[in-house]
Length: 154
Image: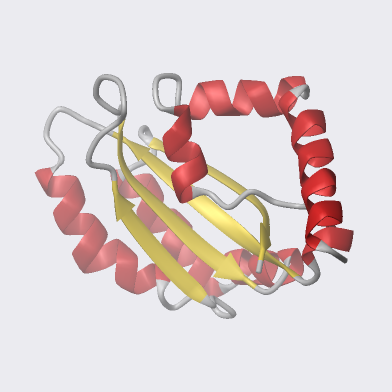
Protein backbone atom coordinates (compact mmCIF):
# COMPACT_ATOMS: atom_id res chain seq x y z
CA UNK A 1 0.00 0.00 0.00
CA UNK A 2 1.58 3.28 -1.02
CA UNK A 3 1.80 6.29 1.25
CA UNK A 4 -0.82 8.44 -0.49
CA UNK A 5 -3.35 5.58 -0.42
CA UNK A 6 -2.70 5.07 3.29
CA UNK A 7 -3.13 8.82 3.87
CA UNK A 8 -6.50 8.78 2.11
CA UNK A 9 -7.59 5.77 4.18
CA UNK A 10 -6.55 7.46 7.42
CA UNK A 11 -8.33 10.73 6.52
CA UNK A 12 -11.46 8.77 5.56
CA UNK A 13 -11.36 6.86 8.86
CA UNK A 14 -10.69 10.02 10.88
CA UNK A 15 -13.63 11.82 9.25
CA UNK A 16 -15.90 8.89 10.05
CA UNK A 17 -14.69 8.78 13.67
CA UNK A 18 -14.90 12.54 14.17
CA UNK A 19 -18.54 12.46 13.08
CA UNK A 20 -19.32 9.69 15.52
CA UNK A 21 -21.35 10.87 18.50
CA UNK A 22 -19.83 8.15 20.66
CA UNK A 23 -16.24 9.18 19.86
CA UNK A 24 -17.00 12.86 20.48
CA UNK A 25 -18.79 12.09 23.74
CA UNK A 26 -15.94 9.88 24.95
CA UNK A 27 -13.35 12.54 24.15
CA UNK A 28 -15.33 15.30 25.84
CA UNK A 29 -15.87 13.19 28.97
CA UNK A 30 -12.23 12.16 29.27
CA UNK A 31 -10.56 15.48 28.51
CA UNK A 32 -13.02 18.35 28.44
CA UNK A 33 -10.29 21.02 28.45
CA UNK A 34 -7.36 19.03 27.11
CA UNK A 35 -8.40 16.88 24.18
CA UNK A 36 -4.95 17.02 22.65
CA UNK A 37 -3.52 15.12 25.66
CA UNK A 38 -5.76 12.28 24.49
CA UNK A 39 -4.02 12.23 21.13
CA UNK A 40 -0.60 12.59 22.76
CA UNK A 41 -1.01 9.63 25.11
CA UNK A 42 -3.48 7.33 23.39
CA UNK A 43 -2.83 5.48 20.18
CA UNK A 44 -5.25 6.17 17.34
CA UNK A 45 -6.68 2.84 16.21
CA UNK A 46 -6.81 2.24 12.47
CA UNK A 47 -9.01 -0.36 10.79
CA UNK A 48 -7.52 -3.86 10.77
CA UNK A 49 -6.93 -3.87 7.01
CA UNK A 50 -4.56 -0.91 7.42
CA UNK A 51 -2.92 -1.67 10.74
CA UNK A 52 -2.27 -5.41 10.62
CA UNK A 53 -2.05 -7.20 13.96
CA UNK A 54 -3.72 -5.53 16.92
CA UNK A 55 -3.17 -5.51 20.66
CA UNK A 56 -5.60 -4.58 23.39
CA UNK A 57 -4.91 -1.71 25.77
CA UNK A 58 -6.67 -1.60 29.12
CA UNK A 59 -6.59 1.97 30.44
CA UNK A 60 -7.24 3.21 33.97
CA UNK A 61 -7.62 6.98 34.47
CA UNK A 62 -7.42 8.31 38.03
CA UNK A 63 -8.94 11.68 38.93
CA UNK A 64 -7.29 14.01 41.42
CA UNK A 65 -8.24 14.15 45.07
CA UNK A 66 -7.42 16.90 47.54
CA UNK A 67 -4.46 14.91 48.91
CA UNK A 68 -2.87 12.32 46.61
CA UNK A 69 0.05 11.28 48.85
CA UNK A 70 -1.71 8.20 50.30
CA UNK A 71 -2.89 7.25 46.82
CA UNK A 72 0.63 7.56 45.34
CA UNK A 73 2.15 5.45 48.10
CA UNK A 74 -0.48 2.71 47.79
CA UNK A 75 -0.36 2.76 44.00
CA UNK A 76 3.41 2.39 43.75
CA UNK A 77 4.03 0.03 46.67
CA UNK A 78 0.97 -2.25 46.57
CA UNK A 79 -1.16 -1.84 43.45
CA UNK A 80 1.54 -1.73 40.74
CA UNK A 81 3.24 -4.95 41.90
CA UNK A 82 -0.18 -6.66 41.79
CA UNK A 83 -0.87 -5.38 38.26
CA UNK A 84 2.53 -6.64 37.08
CA UNK A 85 1.39 -10.17 38.01
CA UNK A 86 -1.44 -10.18 35.42
CA UNK A 87 -0.96 -13.30 33.31
CA UNK A 88 -0.35 -12.33 29.69
CA UNK A 89 0.50 -8.69 30.45
CA UNK A 90 2.87 -7.49 27.71
CA UNK A 91 3.55 -3.97 28.92
CA UNK A 92 2.56 -1.58 31.70
CA UNK A 93 2.84 2.20 31.20
CA UNK A 94 2.15 4.59 34.05
CA UNK A 95 1.85 8.28 33.20
CA UNK A 96 1.69 10.97 35.84
CA UNK A 97 -0.45 13.76 34.42
CA UNK A 98 1.47 16.99 34.96
CA UNK A 99 -0.68 19.50 33.15
CA UNK A 100 -3.05 20.43 30.39
CA UNK A 101 -2.77 22.93 27.54
CA UNK A 102 -5.53 25.08 29.02
CA UNK A 103 -6.09 25.16 32.76
CA UNK A 104 -5.33 22.29 35.08
CA UNK A 105 -6.08 18.63 34.36
CA UNK A 106 -8.59 16.89 36.59
CA UNK A 107 -6.60 13.66 36.17
CA UNK A 108 -3.67 12.60 38.33
CA UNK A 109 -2.50 9.38 36.71
CA UNK A 110 -3.07 7.12 33.72
CA UNK A 111 -2.10 3.45 33.57
CA UNK A 112 -2.08 1.51 30.30
CA UNK A 113 -1.82 -2.29 30.27
CA UNK A 114 -1.19 -4.09 26.99
CA UNK A 115 -2.39 -7.60 26.07
CA UNK A 116 -2.13 -9.67 22.89
CA UNK A 117 -5.92 -9.92 22.47
CA UNK A 118 -9.23 -9.24 24.18
CA UNK A 119 -9.34 -12.90 25.14
CA UNK A 120 -5.93 -12.59 26.83
CA UNK A 121 -7.13 -9.48 28.69
CA UNK A 122 -10.36 -11.21 29.76
CA UNK A 123 -8.36 -14.21 30.98
CA UNK A 124 -6.04 -11.95 32.98
CA UNK A 125 -8.93 -10.06 34.57
CA UNK A 126 -10.69 -13.31 35.52
CA UNK A 127 -7.53 -14.88 36.97
CA UNK A 128 -6.79 -14.96 40.72
CA UNK A 129 -4.22 -12.20 40.09
CA UNK A 130 -6.81 -10.12 38.25
CA UNK A 131 -9.32 -10.56 41.06
CA UNK A 132 -6.66 -9.43 43.55
CA UNK A 133 -6.03 -6.29 41.46
CA UNK A 134 -9.77 -5.51 41.28
CA UNK A 135 -10.23 -6.06 45.02
CA UNK A 136 -7.26 -3.81 45.81
CA UNK A 137 -8.47 -1.13 43.38
CA UNK A 138 -11.83 -0.94 45.15
CA UNK A 139 -10.11 -0.36 48.51
CA UNK A 140 -8.20 2.77 47.52
CA UNK A 141 -9.53 4.23 44.25
CA UNK A 142 -13.10 3.10 43.58
CA UNK A 143 -14.39 6.68 43.61
CA UNK A 144 -11.73 8.16 41.31
CA UNK A 145 -10.96 5.51 38.68
CA UNK A 146 -12.40 5.13 35.19
CA UNK A 147 -11.47 1.98 33.23
CA UNK A 148 -11.88 1.20 29.54
CA UNK A 149 -10.13 -0.76 26.80
CA UNK A 150 -9.54 -0.54 23.08
CA UNK A 151 -7.61 -1.93 20.12
CA UNK A 152 -4.12 -0.55 19.53
CA UNK A 153 -2.13 -0.41 16.33
CA UNK A 154 1.18 -2.21 16.81
